[in-house]
Image 1: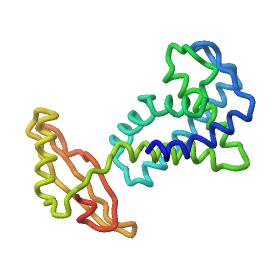
Image 2: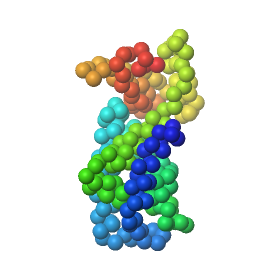
Image 3: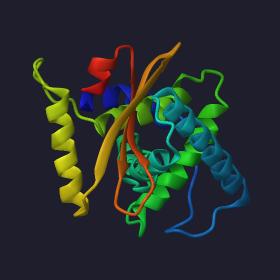
Image 4: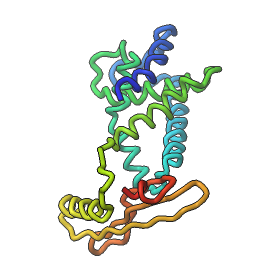
Length: 210
């Protein structure tokens, strides 16, 4: 995982080291108008790239999309790590809100990279970076070939009930189309409507279900 991340960040770090850096105000003061415009345009690009990735990964449930936005973007840890790896915040020590400054600098960088003739670094800083951390949220665990989907479903149900302390009901749903199998787990806490807990897309039902 770290090696893959270095492949993403190294070209951007080199790019930044060869160009004059933009200067953010000390601490969290207001941005000059040119930087504020760049930040807002970069933020718009980020949102577009993020939700495009969600669609591509088969995450179509709005609630889950917003949860992932919180984990990957709003939490700030991934973008702060990116800013540190690329030296984007090298000249800004001692910030009161480093996560917020990393987000601001990241959006301004996206605006700059989007206007480069070669879009490869823009795609690395958006789709490749987000995809890398998205996959990191779902670490691969060795699943025995003989794993019984019914047993896995029961384990999931037990965990859900322990997590919420409610007698949650769990059911599976799936449909197929030209792109493959679309599988979902749906839950229903007492006195609430059915909700999609997660969805997965694959080519065959059994491995997608497991």
